[in-house]
Image (tube, rainbow, N blue to C red; front, side, top):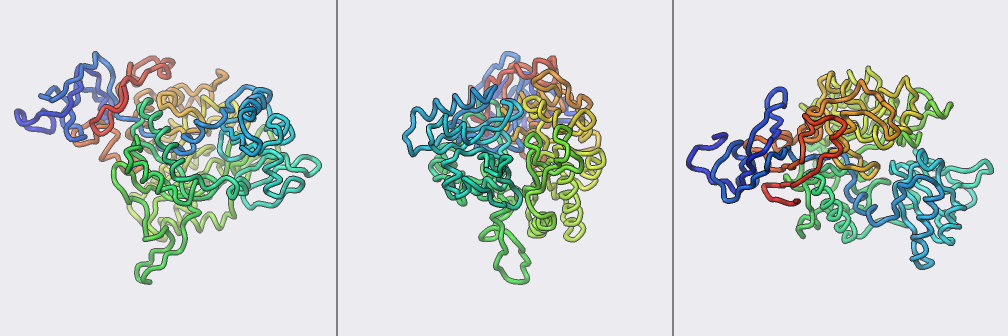
Amino acid sequence: MTGTRAGTLRADLLLTNARVRTLGGRDRSAVAGSVAILHGRVVALEDVPAHRVVDLDGATVVPGFHDAHNHMAWYGLSLAEVDLRVPSLADLYDAVAARAAGLGPDEWVVGAGYDENKVGAHPDRDALDRAAGGRRVWLKHASGHMCVVSSAVLADLGIADAPVEVPGGRVVTDDAGRPTGLLQETAQSLLSPLVLPYPVATLVHAVERAGHAYLAEGITSVVEAGVGGGWIGKSPVEVAAYQAARDAGRLPVRVELMVAADVLRPLTAHPADDLGTGIDLGIRTGLGDDRLRIGPVKVFSDGSLIGHTCAMTEDFTDTPGTRGYLQDDAAALRDRILQAHRSGWRVAAHAIGDAAIDLVLDAYAEAQRRWPRPDVRHRIEHFGVARPDQVTRAAELGVVPVPQGRFVGEIGEGMLRALGPERAGWAYRGRSLLDAGIVVPGSSDRPVVEGRPLLGIHDLVNRMTEGGRALGREEALTGLEALTAYTLGSAYASHQEHERGQVLPGRLADLAVLSDDPASVDPSRIRDIEVLRTVLGGRLVHG
């Protein structure tokens, strides 16, 4: 009997007649036939007496999926907005018109998910005015790094006829200098007085709605990649929404919250404490428990690859003369990272372009040199266009890149156009990270793309765009490696590998029961695997 004394144990639940991918051992290939659960944790990997026995008829059991970078509240809110994942601008305008037809004259049309690479161009304010009958329209780009608004919204902002300068962002204009309605990066914050903050009750509903969708996909834990401030936050009291959801039994999955760097400020304390910057009461990374906890501080260094706003060292292939830009002065970004590290935070820096990655790696190296901390595991969210030397340096510094393999499938065509064939293999790497000794997590950045983990695993393995073109096939992982990324790899990125990510005695009993084994099935069929059941803390929560 594994981890118990024979004759003394009666488990709460026994899942038997299964193919259990424990992800134990050096090569992560260990397989068991049963898993026994007691008090929310795995206690044995064999048949033992149990109060409830479930015969899985040969189904595959894996650790519950952990999405290391998603936007839970944003996704939950988007489920009530106009779905703009359409094939053409005409279809987009039709969708706006259909929603507007059911609204009053003062109500907003809010939509999400459009991609100019797929519809042909960004929507235009004048066409939106016609489609919505002059109503206020707010359409969010799939990347989250830009949006388009109608003339009525521009008038509310006082920029209907002339733009304003926004550090780290851009109010896009036409050849005549008239705003088109497109707001990039930090220019989206101009909207904040009109649309934020969301009420806590609205956010609780969004979180709950998203969480139930996650359970149906085998997701048992996530990292929410930015709350409380900046253009990514939904309310200055966003953590309160997650606490309220938990208190009311409406937080379906385990959540780690990244705190937006915008909310950090100098702390008032005894000079000997040397606390630096943080949030009130000295709260920092690690506060909480296995259900809801504070994670890293989120720092945005640049923008989007498909939106051509990430900071590159060379021009985008399809827009010569354009290299994107940083979201703040380089010195200010460096200082923000240094202060967060010095104050005891783990840092998760958004960096997609290789110029931004250089800046972040330099800051992490300096931070550790000046204020050494063991096993910090600072992160680079996306690590989108990484040169070979940057892979090597990330490994040397112990930095955890958090790429999204799913991007290759859903938005890879736009990435290919932006990078061209010579740099395409640098995009959202997998194999080269593992070969460098880096533990790779799995994540989606949902709702930027569809976030089902089995789709993400499929794309990590196959590296094919929706158009059927290969994108960096040399970066492909095996099915077992991709499964490990979405479970143990993501747990490692959160300093939680001792608690979850493996089906071993003592670990949390967070499990997904699958119709097939992603580690051994034909790679082309991974996306077709079904989630039959989801178990969280030993409780059946789906299926």
